[in-house]
Image (cartoon, rainbow, N blue to C red; front, side):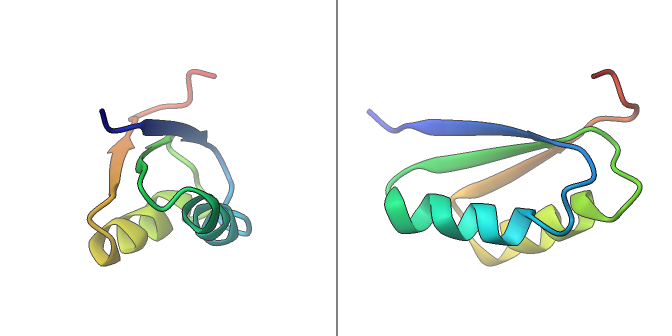
Length: 67
């Protein structure tokens, strides 16, 4: 069975790359779903870049901030 880690994000542009890197360093066999809550700081775009570079990552963009 494959493990899926779901990570909600909002304004995490300064943290997301490091967090993803640490996750995969400790758990290389997991998949990651990043759920961005319409971050105005570019978090969603960074998540898209990460997903493009790594097939273990998927991104869901929410249209508005719902908490």
